[in-house]
Image 1 (cartoon, protein in one colour):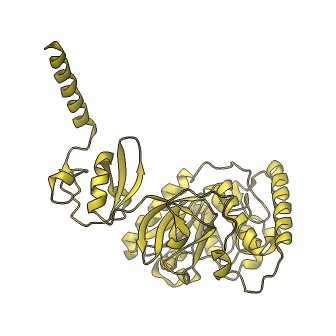
Image 2 (cartoon, protein in one colour):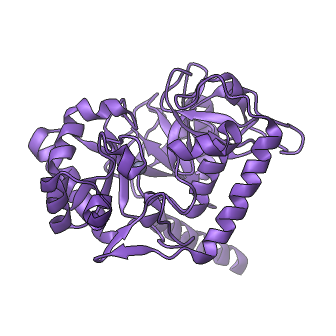
Image 3 (cartoon, rainbow, N blue to C red):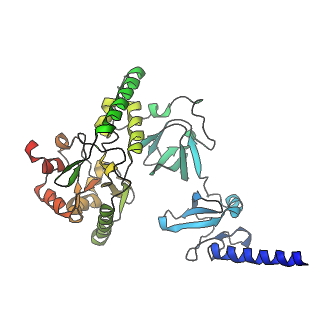
Length: 377
Ligand SMILES: [Zn+2]
């Protein structure tokens, strides 16, 4: 008898604790009590709505609903299995790259390349369209051909090299590269030796209190931990102002990038195109302004013009060019200034320098290099 009482007591305590921990409301996910989601009280998910898993801990899974960051829901892990059967659109969360594979801005090889993902890497799948998986890899969202992704962890030693990437055209590269693999490896090794040597000596270059990062002046390996707080606050104000003034929502495609991530990007390009060519369109690790936490690549909400020169003609692109300085940002790589910046025209890349300097640079219509080193130009 005592034992039963004790059991009941423990049971009631467990129920009480569970009630307190779990989200309060229960929405009928499938109009059926057997398959219910425990969701935030404010959200109701209808049958057949698209839901993606974005992460999980021991007890609960996080679900992304309607692609909005703030619509992250928690689901009791035990109910997942049931829901998955009924709800066909619930996507498998992780896959592995069978080969080195291109991440693109859209589903199809005509879409622009974002980065090449090495073989055997884990990617998070958030959607599927016509033989393409929409995935997230190291903060980059894009599309990969489903043929080159697998649910099983890939043994990197067994599968040798990438064939897909070789087949596909890249906007930066002509078809006539015939550099031998030996040369590529040699270049890569040299590049790595150079990078290691530079790691030791690279101090951040400040002129009049402004950080200068370009092909000449790099940053130490762990210069910034993430996006600069001030820059980020000003960015938020700018995004809001754009919405208020022209009714357009800006998207921030990439902000802070670590040295290590820049290295993955750059090494990929070197592997594919050789060192010389890679330096023309990508920053070497330690030399990307994104590593400072002060630079942002901004695009239109639909991302149709993401990292494309055509962004300059969108109302978002035009607004940014004419208004970014009000918030302390400059268009870092303007048109016809490649001989100075050493970068192609990037109507999407904005750098925070503070309002006063930004105003000055905007009014004088010059680059950061000309502003900080007038004696050179
Ligand atoms: Zn950029």
